[in-house]
Image (cartoon, rainbow, N blue to C red; front, side, top):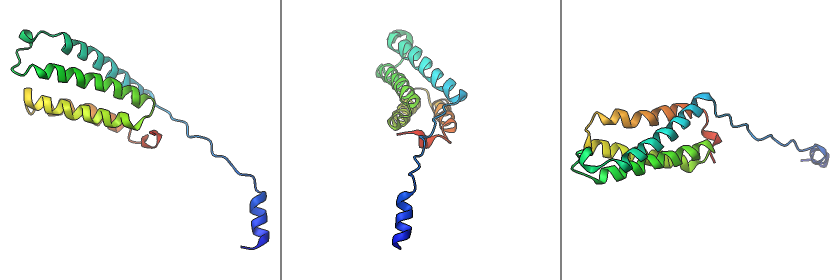
Length: 132
């Protein structure tokens, strides 16, 4: 490079890029609110249900389902603030629910347990760059 081109490069003002506006959108907001409300209500339900009423031969399932729903609440809060760890928490919570569903209910629970993950993934498909 010549000295002239270096000098002209130094004199140009540096243009700072504005931070990208993180737009959540209506449907993602609705989905996160539903996840939080469903998680809180279901966790309370599973935590307070009596074992005799549940008619389960695996009482540990109630505790694990409560943990699953509370993890969903934490994940939804993290996704609200665009935290990447929240995606991992939500995915692991979905895996836990899937395993519990297969153990207790059967194969048809796969649809019910995977559908929320698929919906959230579809809503976030254009927003992966927002997560830090």
